[in-house]
Image: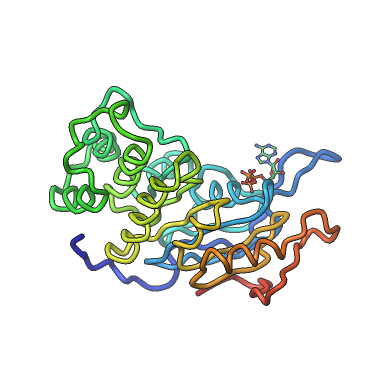
Length: 272
Ligand SMILES: Nc1ncnc2c1ncn2[C@@H]1O[C@H](COP(=O)(O)OP(=O)(O)OP(=O)(O)O)[C@@H](O)[C@H]1O
């Protein structure tokens, strides 16, 4: 893969401060996020883990402007997401953010190449051929560009979705369970690509996952429990992630989870 110098910039590429998100009212209120402060670094793959219902997707959706926080601030690439109207939010998502979902969400009637170019075509922006080639070679899809999704394996389809997420050179790619529908070999291909796109292309990626192996590809893992950040691991391995997860005791009453090993407790923003 050809290494391109990423804009080093200054400060985190995305941050949240005191993020609260509640759903419902009165007795039925659910506090999905309960005061989350976090920084996501440039050129870093961050995994978010935690039990079902701990707020992982809500955090990602609030960071990406797909959901509106009840309180707190979200800044992405220097812009205060909470102050944007719908038109500016849509523009931010189209031009500055990339998305990869568990269901690949490819357009079945378009070829792999057309799917990859789609965000640029929708935004009526020209395709930078050199960048297109870099991304296509990085995902290893050069000889599949004329194929439609139905003619591709699950892993290949997800690699098309990854290339589509990167084609507009987004500030951040948000990946929600990107390997949830893949076998272990295809998962390895997709995760290897995501990690290389960070290390060699300077992309920032935030990935929600339940899978300790997937999390081990990250530079850093954040752990959520009951809408709060309860710990983090640097340079994780599958074993250290599993150890940390074993430290959670769902339903332990205080709602904060516990850890067998000294994960950083997150009273303030989690930063690298
Ligand atoms: N649109 C909604 N309306 C009401 N409650 C919601 C809504 N979205 C999420 N919740 C609740 O907020 C809490 C956090 O949900 P969220 O989907 O963020 O968790 P998660 O950690 O991503 O879970 P999972 O791993 O199961 O996907 C849960 O209790 C969930 O039921």
